[in-house]
Amino acid sequence: MTASVRTTGTRGIALLMVLWVITILMVIVFSFSALSRTETNAALGFREMLEKRNLAEAGVERGIMEIVYRKLKPKDVTEETWRTDGTRYSITVGGGHASVGIIDEAGKIDLNMRDDASGIIIKNLLLLRGVPEDQADTIVDSLLDWKDTGDSDAHRLHGAETDYYETLPVPYSAKNANFDTVEELLLVKGMTPDILFGTRERKGIDSLLTVHGMNAQINVNFAPEDVLAAIPGIGADFAGAIVSERRSRDTALTAADLQTLLGQNYASAAPFITTAESLTFTIEASGHIADRPQAAHAIRATVTFSSDMGNYRYVYYKTPVTARQ
Image (cartoon, helix red, strand yellow):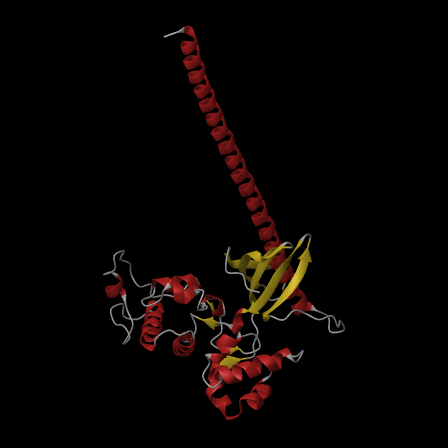
């Protein structure tokens, strides 16, 4: 082998080594670039999430202010007050906005009040949501068994007590006391997350229920249309008429107004409805950034006020929740 051949071979090996080094360096550079891009996007996403959450928090605080103003507004002031029937309002904050809705808890179905009344309305609500009747019967009877304080072994026809729950993979006992949260319904026989919280195809029922209403009847001035439609004597047709009527006026509907609207159906609805307000409200607020209006962070907070509106406290707070427009 001549010297020129050895030199050519050496040069070839050196060239290959250089190419491998360059390739490795390029891989390192691209990996570092991808990592930097990922970290940058994560930081931007975190900042955006904080911005949207702060906007939603601002919406909750504005909602509290509007509730106080609604209750204490002087009679000679003509400025419009926010409705507490879930109507959405938009406020601008910095480079974004918050969508805010307030609902008086008296307009929801209270899980802890009047067994027969709440059971009838909840079953109607489940049927309206497309839940099969046998499953709706199981949920309602089991719900009533869950909170009753009677015999821990006796249950309603479609219900369940401790003897059923102890056979589950993770056994537990029936509570036999009032619900502390709406989410507690997930422990009740027949209830599923899809029914309670909804799916893409079907709305949930969690936002229509409460454990803070403290009223055996539902206030028709604040109840969502879906709740009104579940009340005997009202149904879907009259529910829409009631919502349209209350939106067209500045004053609350009275018993006389309801008698006119419902006609002979009023007698069937009367045991389930009222016009009495409460001091507990749920505020749903979602924060939106100007250039990404569809992506939102939402908060649901329930606040109860003292009788003079001088003090308030949170009794429920959940975030994130499904944003409502």
